[in-house]
Length: 322
Image (cartoon, rainbow, N blue to C red; front, top):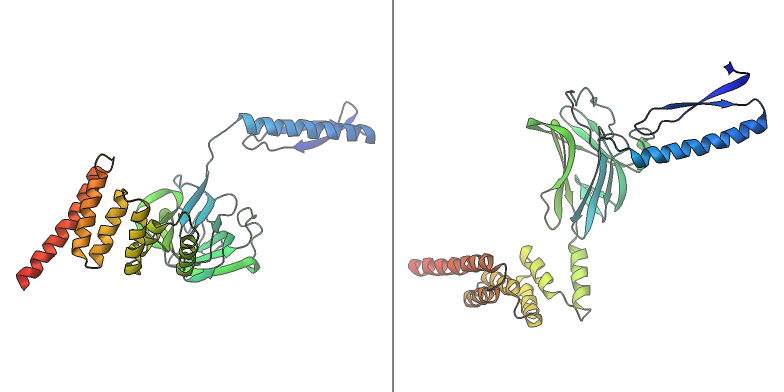
């Protein structure tokens, strides 16, 4: 195309949400062309920087990041969240039987901080792209190494590190925006839930962390001066393991801080589990005494009173049977 004796070349720059087209005139002579091309690059870079810094518009599929402490590490998920906006989703917008990016825009990414089992398969610590293949009665879940992919562009089955099948559940009401949650967290289990429209998919996660936790406790207890006896006693009590050892550790924790009402409360629960009723009642009363004047006074009075009442009721019931 020619105008005023000069050749024209179309340079198109998409400035995020601005779809503005800039047309630049290029000279026939090579030297002029090089000079003008450098000018174009400078102008384009300036315009992109200006557009990004000065204009923020709502996104149709905003990005979200989940970072959840779990086991002795964490699970992190990065994804974009499309909404229904009056559309039918599964079987239409998201076709059955085809690889889906599990969200919008770039591939959804999941990062696990330690070796875990997801839906029964052992997965090494690391970051993966999370793809899915939805079907009406089953979903295939895919973990893939293509974390830099834009959606399914660049996806290759050869890069899959795990595939597993789960059964989707049905919801009573529509969930308008695609949502991923991490729920039902325990010491070594949790669930990754994906919900959209009236579909819910749950991935059970297990961290086989007993050896790691044991190792961490052993290292911490054998490296004074800060020995976490209270944390160790709490872990053994909450997981119902090694209660005798928990009792020993809680006593050592009280030697470190004899005025800590929360440690006396833990001691009361441990002694009650061991059947040491007198020691449990004494510890509960001590916890209430130490809690007086604190912001938690009422909570610890109620909790310790419950322990004492349960022991007394159990004792009366046993005596009546005798």
